[in-house]
Image (cartoon, rainbow, N blue to C red; front, top):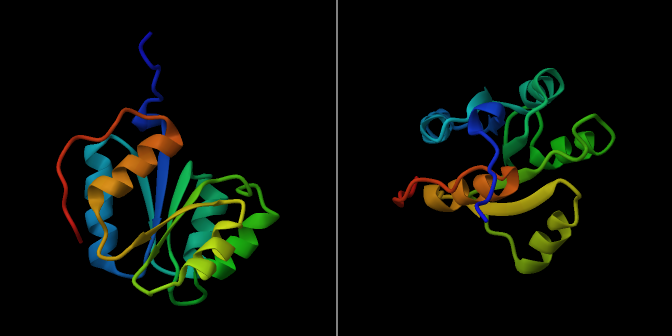
Length: 141
């Protein structure tokens, strides 16, 4: 029996990262897959976009101006997006114990360390949103 996938055009990905180059690369990557995209460059803008747009998944940089990913995760706990899956992006090393502590947050589904493996992140989004598997190819940013 064939798997019934969700249409990527019906799914909104929020890319929250203070690095414009990473935001743009992820935007192009997910647009190629057919997803709708919202972007934010800092903590306050991220919260506004979450409240306004109700994304289906959030790619969230841990370190951003205003306030970072950890503060945003705390704010998500009690809001309408309390069950929105989050993939954390970070360039910082975290030991396994720290990763496990953060993974205990209900929204956190995975960590992606920079440089970002685009095939990995596309596969994670596909799995979380039940959309068709990504096109092949592997790039790092």
